[in-house]
Amino acid sequence: MKKIIVFVLFFPVISLAASFDCKKASTEHENLICSSQELNEADEKMGDAFKYAVSNFPIKNFIFLSQRYFLYQYRGCNVGKTKQEKINACLIKARDRTRILLELSNSHVYAKDFKKFTIDDLVITVSMDSNNPILRYWGYWMPDPYDPEPFPKGWLCNDSEELKTSNNRLTSKDSSKSIFVYKDRVEIDEIICSARQPTIKGTFPRVN
Image 1 (tube, rainbow, N blue to C red):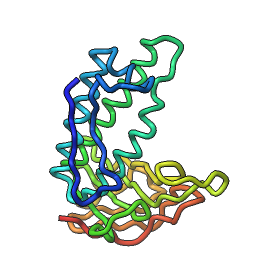
Image 2 (image 1 turned 90 degrees about the horizontal axis):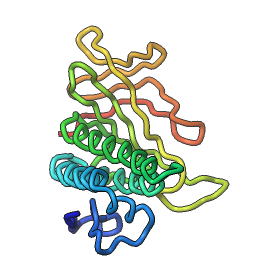
Image 3 (image 1 turned 60 degrees about the horizontal axis):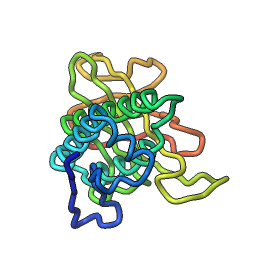
């Protein structure tokens, strides 16, 4: 496995490597990746997609925070009775994250306060795939009140909506949700991500 190191000057607290050196593998998850060429290659592709997203996404802090959140979950992907079942479970996670990172890099981005984005804020992205446009929202983190620990543990709004074209604009396929996507903004009447988080509503300007 090639060693990919990301040096971050402006986000020292959340800087992290997109991949790792197999010579330094120490956890069960890392050893599993290093033992499978297929999973090894998928992990490297995810690392490349991460670097591409860092270079192309307008809110760098979002990419670092969302990757940190993903890696926290990714470390627990090795579930299954056999080694191959564990590899297959991690392959699904790595490939799905790679696809999302590449999608994010080519999406329109919307946020109310993007210059100082933190996990308390929200980023909305809209993929511009005309065959299957997807709106994603990520953020509004809150600690678990019954087991309060720092991020990445806790509650996070991390979901997506399939979109359709209606009256020359994109809107949710779910008719119960008032989501309207324009070139310069996204307008949301009200979406409840979870009972523990703020309601998603209002106008989210386009980030260029």
